[in-house]
Image 1 (tube, rainbow, N blue to C red):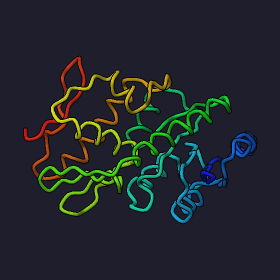
Image 2 (image 1 turned 90 degrees about the vertical axis):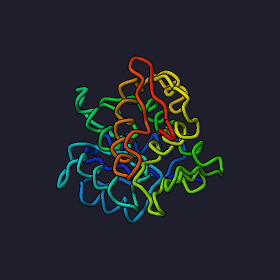
Image 3 (image 1 turned 45 degrees about the vertical axis):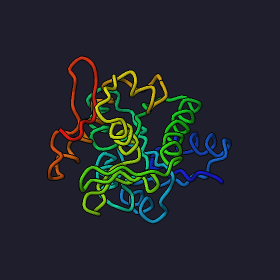
Length: 231
């Protein structure tokens, strides 16, 4: 079955480059050249993955990502930023907003395809088991790829869910950053330990909103992280 990719990008040369290479690799690709239309397409088409430029007519890519993550229809769709912004702060902002990856222009089509496949593999791995974990009123459901509190789903992206399930299914086990890189990102060279810290911060921000779960993800300074329950 073809994977559906939504490309939100206003540069016609990049559109053609991505279209040609992704279609050659067997992906179905739709392109949108402006922000509001891209957001509408994401909500109506529900693609398997979104490639998102940061500087777009009508609505910036950061705002689009923020809206995608705030909407139950699109919160789990993986997003790869495709941008000319190369500063580390721009990357950190994108990850804070819920991006799954960040590719800077100019880029190699081969690298872009590798990154797309890597993100999709993470999603496939996160749907390959059918178990559930419960911590009081908090439930981690692998089959549905969903974390819920008292039956109400929490807004976790696919990557965040996979990371949280790994931590919570191994209670009190300490994972170093290198182990998390290997288990979640399979040693992908373009992911840095700083990326893990950003995703852990996002998990904490969501879990801390749940009564009784303010401190379940622990930091061991200079070592890594663990999920502790009960704490």
